[in-house]
Length: 182
Image 1 (cartoon, rainbow, N blue to C red):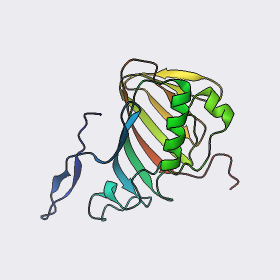
Image 2: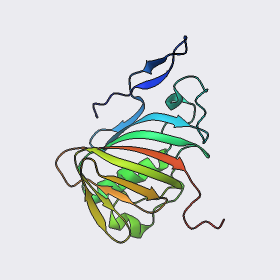
Image 3: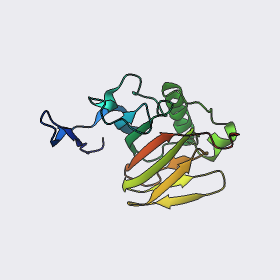
Image 4: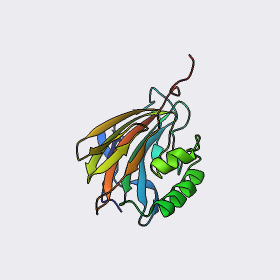
């Protein structure tokens, strides 16, 4: 499990900037596979900062892979080292069902890597700790701490070939799907 803190700043009862929340929330995990926490979520863009409360706890955020339509998610995601391919495919297929995956990966995708998937979002993801291979339809790249990827609604997967978990921090913003006609 990732050892992270989340600090949410906002106005206190006197209108002064204050730390309102300090713990990660909305955690899902499966030992040996992944751990994640929704750090913040909205149902609108631009974001309405007058909405009170911990928005990462909003109804329906939970295990969703994508933000609500017109919204965004900020998440911490820790991925353990890859497991045997068939077990990895089974675990990821079960996770896809749990998170309501919109676009079912093809068999060719799953053969490329068990975690291949696509979302209708713009993602900005940075490696905070460890290393991970980012896999695309045409190649892959090894990402290390500080490396950032912008994913524009296309197929991708994550392969942790190290012996330690990798921590990713990212924001997912609802977007017009790649290839959609305007």
